[in-house]
Length: 467
Image (tube, rainbow, N blue to C red):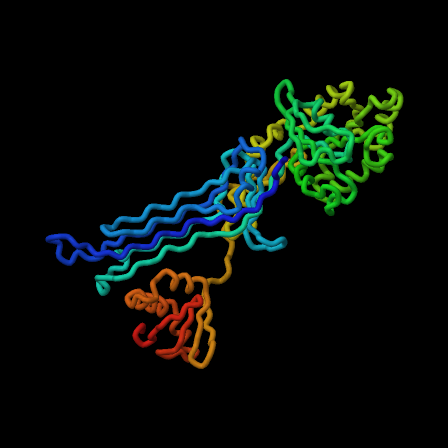
């Protein structure tokens, strides 16, 4: 069964801690600090692999973690960088880091061509060793930085098949039989509705090229709102260049849904447009299936009636999967109507890369869906930088002699040092003074001995000593 959805938690590696060390060798007086830096944490990278067909391998696990950076050591030995973790996904995979529907924050990626990569979680930076803090007035620093934690969060993965042609129609309209006759695919064929429970792919061989044809499971009225098999499989027709609407010539003689072909046709077209307006604009071919169940005169009359109804832009072909009637004509029509540059799945859409423009840093190149063979928008390779939320801090009075400082930068600064280390806290106090935090605290009435909380941790600071 096709696995087209997965929800996984990814965690990048934390950076390694910096080393606190002093050079101690014979005949080397006053060797000084020689602690090395910690290594960067490994990143989690999603890679597009054309050898995969669905997300089954990804969905087997729910948690993925990259390697942690190594700690720094003496003799200026830097820690090793953490190992990156690569997750392989098939072409056509969309990745969304937004945990809740409708949430605007987060990032999105779309991988369509083999080899495309997306860094979905960046590793934390390594901490600096004590050698980096040595100055003329601080010649023997006895502290070092801690490594930062890596990014982590839940990702929603969704696969949208990269097919050139999509077969749509009511349940038991004959789509699976038609796919089996056009290609070498072997879908399950039976006489009851909803025989096909997941999309099936087949390859239509031509003289000069191949076309990927997808059998989309049967749609019914209300599918775009979740009725029947729901709208899960409607997404698989979004990237097709051509839709073949398969319509049962005589539903009253088979196990088809309903007895009015015109009503069945209108229902499917309405559900496609309700799911995505672009689907309503895709080129169409109408395949009247099961022509062997009616007389030749009735089949010819039906073709003429539908051709007059739909106009000359939509070819109408009477087909029979049992006898092979109309199959070669339909195959030739597909080869002619699918644009050459759209054939072949991901290779034809190698100009589409992610992330899609929703994050703080936008995409290098972003394109459209490729529907209908429309020209894809291609932008120059560059990084789009958008204004982020103002970086700063705020001072909050919690009580008569209790204060709190809030701000991501301030919290990250305090979190990188050991608050039990007097040398480290003296350095932090100096940094806070230069940033202006102590000045803001004093303006609120902060005095030596007052309680101060930063990132939920009580910190002891002496404004007079820091000044």
